[in-house]
Each structure stands twice: as C-alpha cells, then as structure tokens.
Length: 455
Image 1 (cartoon, rainbow, N blue to C red):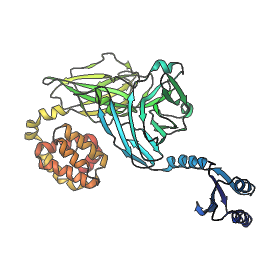
Image 2 (image 1 turned 90 degrees about the horizontal axis):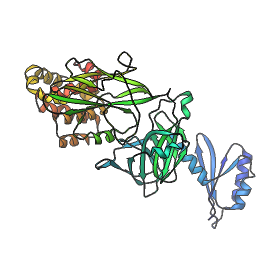
Image 3 (image 1 turned 30 degrees about the horizontal axis):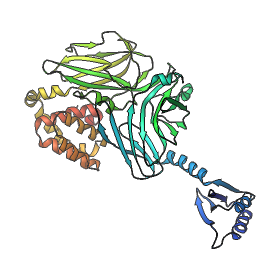
C-alpha cells in the first residue's frame, strides 16, 4: 500500500490559492481518494489534502508555498509537541508484593501522558494499554564496558498492546553547564546493553523514544563535582521498652520509596521533609541534639556515602534511643561534625506518643481538643490536599484511625470535604487523638500551624 501523504498549503497569496484550486479541481471525483480540508491554525489559514496519488504529489511539489510531508512524519511531530504540552495524568498503580520485589500495574485508558505516583516513571501512550513494570538488579559487569554507572533504577517494562512510544525516566541530577551531557539511557536485552542518547533532559526526567520494551534505565558518566537531589528516610525499629533504633537511610531522590519500605518490613516509616542536596563522593555525619539518646552509629566522624540502586538499601546511620523518646532533631552534615548542614529534620517517634497517652491526657490534650475545634473552619479552608493525605498516613501509623476509615476518606475527591471529614473524625475520637493530630500537623506544615495559632 502506498503511504498516505499530507500536503499543507499556507494561504499567503491569491496565486497559491489559485494553484491549489486548479490542482485539486482535476482530481476531485467520486472515484478519487482525495480529501480537501480547509483549516485554521495559530491564526494562519491552510488546507490539508490527503492523497496517495503519485502524480498529484509530484504536481503539488511544484507549487510555491506548498509542502508535501509523510503522514508518519506529521504524526511524529505531533507526538513530540504533544508530550511537551499535554497535561500529565498521575496515577497510583495496582501493586503486588513478593518476597523481594514489588510489581506495578498501570491501566491507561486512552492516548496521553501517564505518570506512576510510586516510581515517577512517565509513559507516553499512543492508545489504550496496560503497563506492567518492576525494578530489577543492574548487572554492573555488563555496564563496565560502556564506561557508565547506574543513575537510576533499572525497570523491566511490558505492554502487550504495544501502546508505549516514549518513556520519561526520573533522574536525581542537578544539571547545569558541563553536566548537561552526562546522562544516557541504557536498553538492556539479554546479555547486551545499548547506550542511547536522550531525546531531551528536563529538570526531573530523561526522555527517550522507544520501539520495543524489556529493561530500561538511566546511566551516567562519573563526574565528582556534580550534586544530586537526595532524600533522607527515617524508619523506627522498635524492640519494646527500654530501647528503639531509628534507621536513617540516605539515598538519591529517584529511588522509589516503596522499594525501600519493602525491605523495612516490620519497621515504621516516619514521613519527614526528606529533600536535600548531596555531593557525589561527599562525606557526611549525622548529628543529634537530644542528650538522652544512647548512641549514633557508625562512630566515625564522617563516612562516604555510595549511591547505588539496590538490590539492598541498608541503614546509612542508626540512632539508638530510649523507647519513651518523643522526638529527635537530626542534622546531616557534610565534611564531618563541623561541616555544612545539608538537611535537618524533626522526627516524631510514634511509639513515644502511644506510650505517653496517659500523661498526655492529664497535661496537654484538653487544650489540644479545644484548639483543634476552634480552628476547624480555618483548617478546612487552608490545608492542602497533599498535607491531608500525609496526615492520614500519620494518623494511621499512630493508630488513631484504621485502614477502613483511611480508605473511606481517601476516595473523597474534593479537598475541603476530605479535610472536613478528617478533622471531624479525630474530634469524635477524643482528647488524645486531637493531641496526636496536632503533633503530626506541626511536623507536616509548620507554616499552616502558625497561621492556625498553635505550634
């Protein structure tokens, strides 16, 4: 079959209009496959003429101001522009958890851009399709011959409908000047790896067009002077009275949190403002201003953090503390104990809140309930959707709400209605629950709490 051709004519002068009219008048007939479509685009009038007639195409090419292009090229240009301008639909995938890995399933109902909320992956779909994906271990021996190192997780991706035409892989690099060319895309098939240049690199993603699937991931050239976006993830490991351990894991920002949680089974993830800027090859220490902690390991004044992408995510630091400790103030310092602060966070320890409920009821909770009730309207009006979602996670961890209550609230689409349901649910549960909600809210949004009049 002859490939369909699109002819585009900008109507910039009467002579071009006349030439197009004369050309088309000889071809429009009941038996012709020609279609003549006047259009308006960005304020310029033009016509699109679709035909597979070779003589027509040759004649059209002789008219000044006319352009003959293949339909495939036109579609490619459209998709390139579309993925730049289109709104990205963010979806939470269905997950199935195995012993060592989590598999994701994303159902894309139509063409467009879809982002996985767990991994940050973005798929450009040319039609409906089901995407199945998971992270797998890099074979660094395979990469050695390319002179590259991993710059992100390696993803195994499948789509039986063949609907994926482009991938956007999340990166953690802070790029400028000389660093713009360090990132590439690795396509791994069997025992071979192909290193591809990206279509483009944004502040958050590396974009690559694809024609087939299998294993895809980011690789980079080593340049020690560049910084990356990092994340500090605290997990509480409780041994009961009198001791607990806070495992602090420092990782690049494009390591999926759910992958780390999978390896911390039985430990409690504590949401904090985790973002930080780290130097490749930098040396760091963890500082804590709480005098009653028992110890921090490793004991070295500073340690070098190696950025890898699994399969194991071991604690970078461990803070040993008493089980009744309510919170700790942590600081991540570069170049040792007297170095620059790259991250600071106040970590609320959920076990301490539960242990201290009786004391809280006698000392602070009455005022907490009154405060919460008095700011109910302002809370509903001002709190953001993301803070409400994180607040739900915190309340579930503290056992203020159960899974059923959380799922009931999460499906409420309207932000204010969701916030209203959360605060009313906690108020119904009494004094201690209000104190816990207030404490979590101070951690999540201190500026809102200042506006509400409590901190």
